Each structure stands twice: as structure tokens, then as C-alpha cells.
Amino acid sequence: MQGRKLAKSAPGLTVGDAAARLRLLEIENAQLRHALESRVIIEQAKGCVSVRRGVPVEVAFELIRGASRSQRREIHELAAEIVANAGHFTVERR
Figure 1 (cartoon, one colour):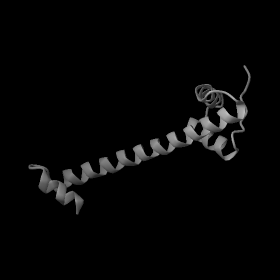
Figure 2 (spheres, one colour):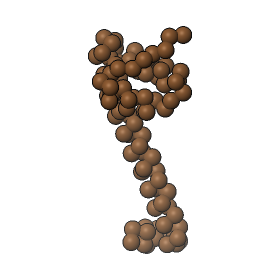
Figure 3 (cartoon, one colour):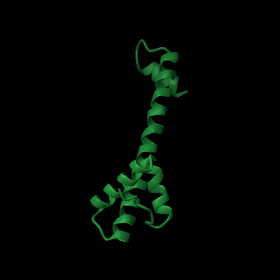
Figure 4 (cartoon, helix red, strand yellow):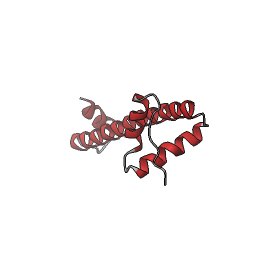
């Protein structure tokens, strides 16, 4: 139904074009939601590490990012683990 409304509102746009555009917008919306959720988890992890380690949030982020890279893990996955473990995580020393 939304596809038909979009098709009517844009001259020369077919229902198929509108459906394809709607699908692209749905995908983009899902990607943006995921990015926002990841950002929230990362912010929470920064706060946990900052408090636990007694460092500024900028330093906490660098610690998380460094651990993420050294462990070859997505930063949001590590951040979720940090939040679940109340700020505990291991930083590998180089």
C-alpha cells in the first residue's frame, strides 16, 4: 500500500520502482537502527571502562578500540561484552 502511495506522489514512477525504492529505504532504516544501537552500547562500555579504570571516556574508548583491533573483533561486540561484564575486559599488552 505504501508503494502505491509513493507511486502516485511521484509522476513517472511505477509501482515496481516505488516498491524497489521502499525496499532500499527499509534496508537503510535497518542499517541506521543497527548503527544507533551499536553506538549506544559503545557509549555504555566507555562509561563502564571509564569508571572501572578511573580514566576519561576518551581514554576508555581508546582502550576499547585497541582491544577490539588486537582481538580482531567488531567494536560493538566487544562493547556489549564489556557492558555485560560491568566494565571488565582484558587489554593485551604489546
